[in-house]
Length: 269
Ligand code: ACO
Image (tube, rainbow, N blue to C red):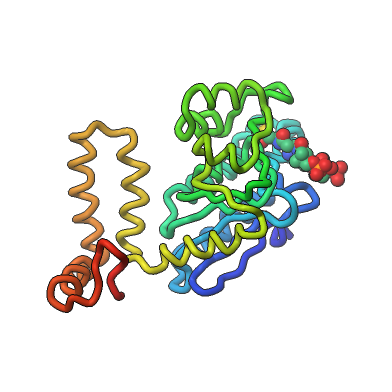
């Protein structure tokens, strides 16, 4: 019944996952949130998936939470339903933040409010210059919840985060890149090519190292230097448990075989 709220296909190591309610500008209702969790679960450990890209069908990436189904109708059912809906949306964003494979948000259009949760959850974000972003919560009388305030404070300079949250003003992809909400912005007609290029770069790397690295970047942000130093030693040793040949092979191909230079690209796997 909920199967079509999320579209996806896998090609050449990349899982292309799309919000699929274009007629509702891909706003997130409970059915979409439940379905997205299923799709993420189904793709996470597949051998033919090395990178996951999250984009939207139609003119939107995501117009945030569904104000009718996620808020009004759920609230009408009482606190239990509200908490359940929050668990479902926050749940898949959390799963995405710590996903086994590297993830890229390909922001093709509108991105509002609750959409900042999955945007932040993706490891990288590349937007169309034409995409439009806003924390529009203030426009309908609430604070940016569901993590959105935390997202902008984590990613943006404080003055920009404050302006963004207080005004609800739209910014385009270029400004979003300038404010570091996304890595970069390219013209919409080049967006998929650029994302594919970045995904292919990731596909060349050691998957255990990618997972260890993405987790480390998120974890150390909140640690003291000494705690980070210790965590990173332990994280590398844990990664060695999952892949005990990768780094030896990386050294061997450079030092003994002289077949590549780590400064210039990845070793042959
Ligand atoms: N919640 C519920 N329905 C929505 C949402 C939403 N967030 N966004 C769009 N829709 C629905 C519209 O009600 C409309 O439904 P209808 O066809 O049954 O009338 C349909 O999607 C198409 O939307 P339009 O407004 O007609 O599309 P348009 O392209 O003109 O505008 C825009 C797009 C700017 C994204 C507009 O739909 C909009 O402002 N949406 C709300 C954005 C927003 O502020 N989201 C909430 C953020 S805060 C949070 O997520 C907690």
